[in-house]
Image (tube, rainbow, N blue to C red):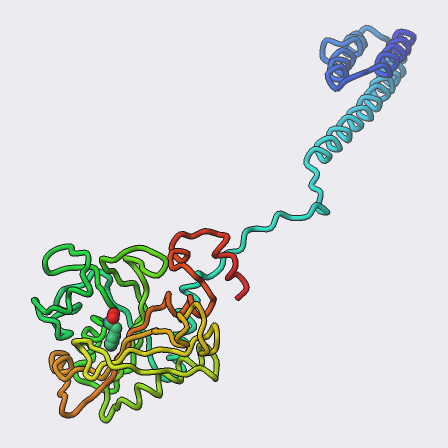
Length: 344
Ligand code: PHE
């Protein structure tokens, strides 16, 4: 019996040494150590042995079993190690590869100019107000001293939603809304940026939608010279200390007197070039002293209070500042255009 066990051990070890795969190893484990294997069979036959032989053979059987198990375990460990290595290699990440940079966004040039203008006026004590783009006829026209059949409405034909509701043609309705909200209190010092809409041609300098910034100041003793000083301060912060302004008489139903304000051309310094059509000046905004009728309709006694208002075209100001020759660039979202403002 001892010889049989030794032969079994030899046979098993020999077979195990030639093992080629995990599967073969499993098969051999079952073949030699399994319940129906030869070792179990030998052990089962031990009952027939004598009391002296039994521990001797038992010892040999255990040694054989241990020897086979050891080899199987070694091989098993080797397979496991190999498997781990293969998996790690497959999952390997090369941390030395350069990363793929994510695209960096930037503030739109119009937003940027609005922020700049806001900063300048906030520095002068103004707050920023807002109003709706879909506006009532009352706020857009009537309360600004443009009654229903006023001829000046022709200059600002709009997109009507109903007879009484339209896309606002100007940011001036925010003047009226602000006066209503403040209920006769002073001082009022606001600016209001926002989109406005007009029936208009779309070309290099016109767009049916554009951006304005409105300004309104109401208090006691507000004078025309305050308006002039404020606007001069503004353009000099925007375009540089040497910038000058020029006021020309004009007409708006909601201001009296009214002016159009020109700024000395930033391109040529005022000597004359293509941008300013050789005049040295560029028109950037309309302004004036708030009309007594408008103050009254807004709940402010014109005998006690005065004020000034202005409205500027933001695209115009941005085009001058950055030398942009076509207003449509602002709206078509061409990245080649927009990326030029990334680091400004
Ligand atoms: N709302 C006027 C326009 O759009 C500009 C303006 C604003 C003029 C305030 C005077 C005072 O043309």
